[in-house]
Length: 433
Image (cartoon, rainbow, N blue to C red):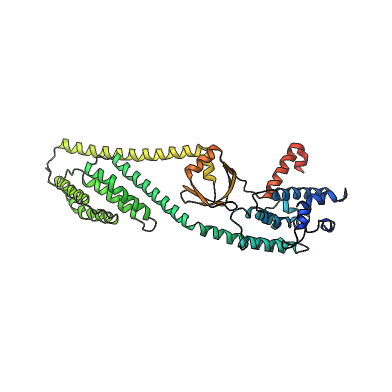
């Protein structure tokens, strides 16, 4: 370790605020020069492998144009400290949580997510943590890593605050759309399984669907709203069915005041106050009156016919409900079989992706996923603005190959995987070793 430290080029162990002219003079990459300048046989096979792997790791990072120059300059100063850490503790290559390895991974990923300015808290944390390491003769990465992670947490909070407005709007729109779909499905299932008079069926489609949508949207804050609006719809449908017995008519007369009160409360919430509302309730009153005034004496044949009609309508309603559920299950199965849908379902907040654009490749981070996964917000790399995409467009991008999910592992793990793969091709025994 002492020999390696002495052979490091001037400036290799300097702090971030030190002179960086030596970096340019030595073409940035110190570790390959160390390897070339060491006397042959001076390193053990294990130390040679460590030096070679770290050279590849730093070369991968320092040639990555997606990482801003200011971040790469900071990473340059970690070459010798990381080498010392890896030589002392070979767990660097086996544990992702190793402080030196995690710090290198975080630095390599932190720079391109958002614009960096001279007073950026994350940039200051990066400088401070790297400076802490570079100033130590025996580098201890744990404290520097904690400082860097705190800076990243502050950056994350700032990112979420920046997109809080779009998130709130997207959540509201998604919730309204889901409520509308649920309301339409509830009404259509009942109308498909019932022989409902035109007055009521038209009312349910045009006026009660918005009521149900409102109920679904406020169910979380006002539990029972959906049940109340749904029960009122079912009671309204029941109220316009023929009543063959005196007991049924008495039940209708008893239920009407509560039913009308509930209907009016929901319609008031929607502010439906025009003449059409008065016409509906006038027509509904006439229909109820005709049911109550109809001859009570029914032949046994007519009573049986009505009973059979009621049973048939109940069966149709159940069938309609089962068909709706089967259609939803079939749609879900089709989505599961679609690779694009599977890729979409696997996306999680914090993942990094590449979008193929006309001008090249754009790297982004998934900053937010809506609760129902219908909208995705991405933070742009470098100085690019955040943007959002609906699930349909994102799925199309997966199908066309215009989007790629980047490996979640850090740069250290990626280089190690490549090295193992190459070793397996060239020398299976070496790969095992």
